[in-house]
Length: 200
Image 1 (spheres, rainbow, N blue to C red):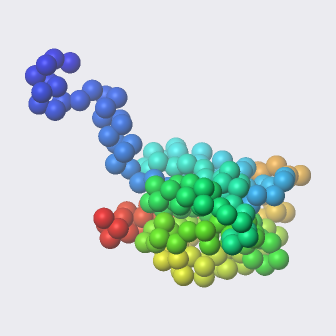
Image 2: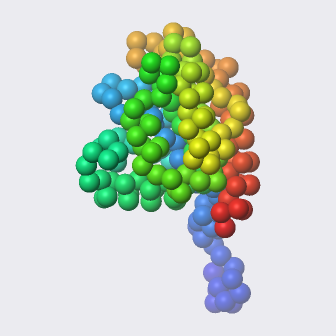
Image 3: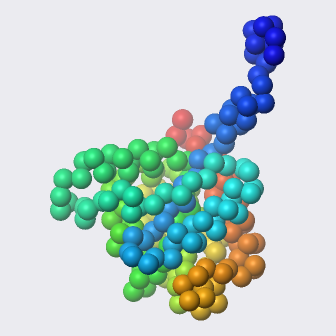
């Protein structure tokens, strides 16, 4: 590349790719469980693999277990809370991987949700749930919490069955879920892009 090209702002392929990446929305795939032997990492990797192949946003897995958040109010968690809020603030939207515990979400996910406020506001979220009835009841509880946090949850919702989409702890999703997953991602990106304009 010559001096004049550089002078007048022409860029090489690497710079163009970097600019495209920076201009894309940042979507966090949040693993909603911290227990030993959890299945959420497998589901999260499946979502990320499908999402990355689309090439329409920057997707990353965000594991709440990495932040080691104590129960809210029981210990000084300034460092953990600061790191958690900084990560959430860097994201434009979310996909929650949600498992059903006693007809609701896990205590660790509820705790993580409560550790932030403004970092959630005016963003969009999709839900991928699993359980004996597809995790539907957990997803419905999560929707109520997200509303209070000013997160717009989208309608399309992949619901995975412990009986048909898992085999002895190994995630083997039926192909039919791809339609819902891509439909959910379409809605998350559409709403995330729209809501980003009001946060500017």
